Length: 102
Image 1 (cartoon, rainbow, N blue to C red):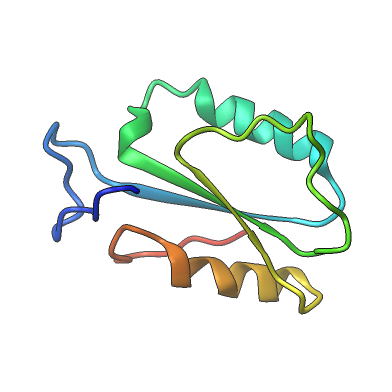
Image 2 (cartoon, one colour):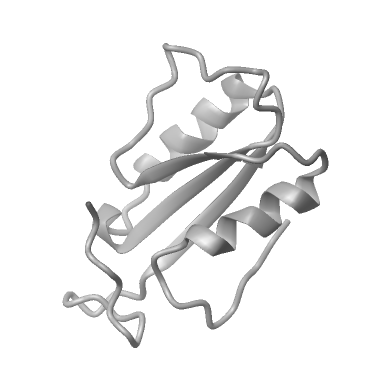
């Protein structure tokens, strides 16, 4: 179980806590590339979380998908990336001061 984020979004090491939200729809290969890239960042892994929202629950997660420790995988039954993006903020650990969605 993860610890709740500090109230001011600043971790003990003076880094800002960040949540990365990734909606996905039948694209496990590119999701893996994205997760790999996030894992390779120099920003401390303990200072950010990744929330992936699968927008097609019928398309099950492949067993080969490597999910980092700081990643949560959610499902959204409503179609459309807007529904996936709207579900994720309900599950973030950091307090949202600004939310940037693509």
